Image (cartoon, rainbow, N blue to C red; front, side, top):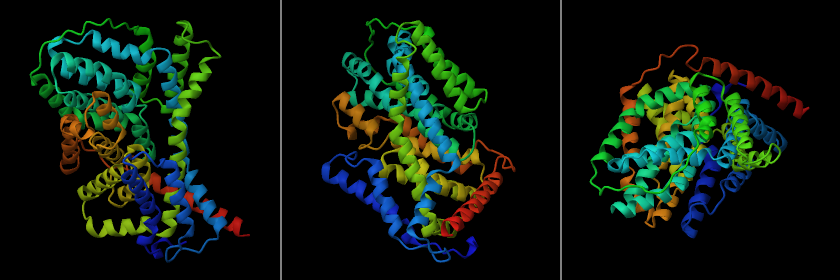
Amino acid sequence: MDKAKIKGSFMGLMPLAVFLILYAATGIITGKFDSMPLLVGMILASIVSFALPAAKGEKKLSFEQKVLKFCQGGGEQTLIMMVVIFILAGAFQGVASKMGAVSSVTNLGLSVLPSKMVLPGIFLIGCLLSFAMGTSMGTIAALMPVAVDVAAKTGVNPALMAGVVVGGAMFGDNNSFISATAIASAQTQGVTQREKFKLNIMTYAPALLINVILLALYPIKDVAINSTHSYNLVNIIPYVLVIILSLVGMNVMPVMLVGVFSGVCIGVFHGDFGWISSMKYIQQGMAGMEDMSMIAIFVGGLVEIMKYLGGIQWLMDTLGRRTKTRTGAELSIGMLVTLLCVATTNNTIAIITVAPLATSIGRKFHLARARVATLLSMFATHVQGLIPYAGQLLVAGGMAKVSPVAVMPWVWYCYLTLICSLLFVFLGIPKVKVTEESGYDHFQEEEMNAERVSELEEKEVAN
């Protein structure tokens, strides 16, 4: 099929528009933006997509052929690999939580926290905890009770303390090797976690340093955290292994398996569970990622149908007319993922949805895949920490007994990372040389092969 003859159509974006309208409407009506489960919204959008006509230049497909195309998108190789990694990351989190790794990391940080550095200390503990756990929500839930107690003792505004915790939580949401956000951004662009992490940390180091300095200068009463904080250094070994193996470049799947196995061995040795009972906690951790995995599969299928409907081509044509430079292309990717994140309050789903379009933009403007992956991750995480109706601010505000809106001005780290992200785009620093390996040449070959397979399968169905 000659792709050059396919005409873009705004109607091809109607399934996504329906999803966003339904999601926003239920949130406004109920006052809670998590009223509509994301998976239900994606299923409804998928139903709408089957009823729309093909783009001009596309062959008209039967309902059965549309379903097959949807399944091809949902079963795309990179997407399924990402789902498997999600499940393994969930298994690791389940084991690590049960065998005391989470509490050991938190208590280790609290035990060495100087009384005059409470605010930057709480922030850095949040960074460490979120980097180890790979979940911003888990970090907030674990650290906010301590932060609330410290706020009461020091007279610090509880909203400020909540903002400090959220900032630390968002550090790991972007940088952790086992964060769903980091996994999605790296896997969809075919880069390693180490490549993305290197660009992330170089870009965000100034934000991290400035935030620590600002918090250290903020005037508070001296306070001693007198509670006993017990920890076991052996319990943090699984986290240390995951971080070290990821940094040396090992594939993320065996890294997750090493993390799970080491966690199980330590948990059994300490009597936290037995060999057989450990499977229950592995399953519970996996179950926490099942919803995200199913949504990712439906998003992949929906994006494939929107390509067939001409929606993706329309976006590319529109961006192509208005975007003339690499800087403009990178900014477009950042703005797209930001807008979708604001609409869905789920940065991982925003990344998965925008990723195919980001790949197309990256190929057209000869961008480095590592920079595109970093853009997706950065623009999706700093905005997530600033949305008052997103889970992070809702949980932090609820535990601090303040309005989520009151927390927004105090999430200094997210504002600083927003500035750093824009500098990343406009200054082009750190630079990544675009070569055949670091660019999208190999991606293009894979897509062409996938299209050939797709056409053969369509002919088989037709026959």
